[in-house]
Length: 84
Image 1: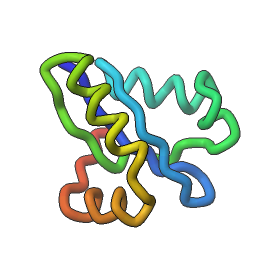
Image 2 (image 1 turned 180 degrees about the vertical axis):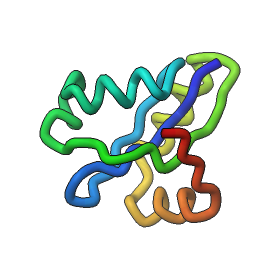
Image 3 (image 1 turned 30 degrees about the vertical axis):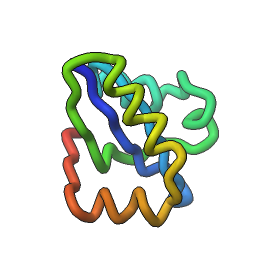
Image 4 (image 1 turned 135 degrees about the vertical axis):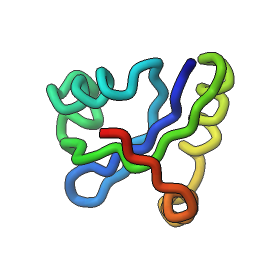
């Protein structure tokens, strides 16, 4: 099982990624193990989607990374899922 997730980071920035373990990945982001989140410290997971495999999750991630912030926020507003 894979997850697409969106993090809310400091200064209101959003970060979109995929993982097989959201809690582990969030901790890695908090420990500055990823480039973007090393200077935009994540505050919380604000959205998730579940996929049966990495390929499908990566496809959705590519789609969302092309979206505007406004479109991502509309998606989040329709279905907030926070597990951390």
